Length: 454
Image 1 (cartoon, rainbow, N blue to C red):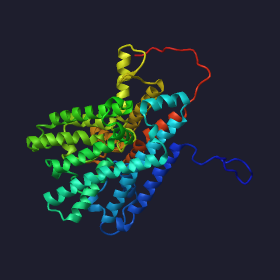
Image 2: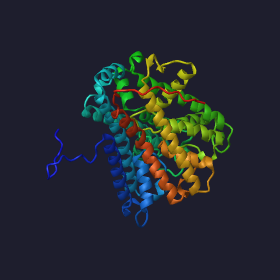
Image 3: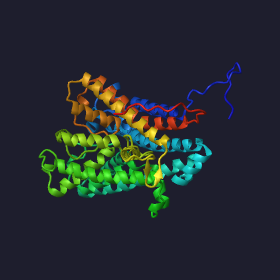
Image 4: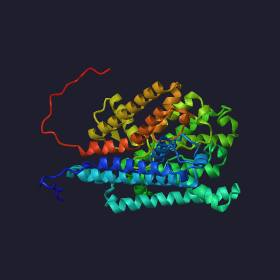
């Protein structure tokens, strides 16, 4: 396609030269539009519209599928406002799955021929095909899981809690969309604490969160090769393995740590404790629902939760964090170095040096963003370090869990969280695609140097 010419006949450079820039601008535009809609008087209960900062924070949290709030969702927002939030969650979740998959497809097509052949043989995702296939696949998966979850929740609200069918359908649909997109917005002031011992509410929500967090490429491959685990790609094996391990270890960790805490799991009967323990191993994957009060948890539990939030979920899904594949790869980098091995190998596959450098870049930049934001919030508030760190990691990993301090933060601190949610939602996706698209072959190499390490 020829480059557009100006009136003087000089070739004009496109305003957005990199696909990652398009993603950032698209999400920023969606957040701005959502902010304007939430500022309308019709979006708020009572007289007047929401202040700009409140609308901006809520719009960013919804579009970036985070779930942090500065006002009480059910009492502050009108049905119209709740509808705007629901639409932003759906657009944000669908958009990040689609755009991340399309960026992956673009990167794959831009690779060299030899690398493309290797990638096609390994990932077997050449069937990802064209844009239409990606969009249709993401839409089908989203609608399927949201519909199944909404049906289960609607039946429970109507039959178990005597909600009118219309209200039950609204509650079921809202929380199904919020769960699958890992948003964590709830229509009760205490999130899902009133349902802490109800498996018919907690389990559908938890499984929807897991489904959304696995990512579109994994579901695409499971749909084609579900009964052939040996034929799964390295990405799918890594994502499923780490997800299962984190869910199991997280459930054991939370349950054991909080079993006797009378303010959290200790207030429930044994089956309820097991259910709540599993539920709170799923939510840091990254959805902001809670069935017990995080503000009453032990500090050790909060620290473990922060680690789970930082890792996050699968790539090209609705979860945030540095992603499970990044974490798994870094673990094997350390393992290979400790054993003195030259190559990093995972599931009988050698990992390229390029992938290792990208994983290190994402993890270290994410860590830097968390540390810098934590320091900044400590300067802006008088809160304890643990409370601030939990809030910062929750915002960056687009989780939405909170110890209850979000609404009490000064406006300046809330704006820091707004920027952190935006960075956490789009940063890893745009960074990795930008790094991959900048790959080039050097014609020379400098002499090797070996600085002293450690």
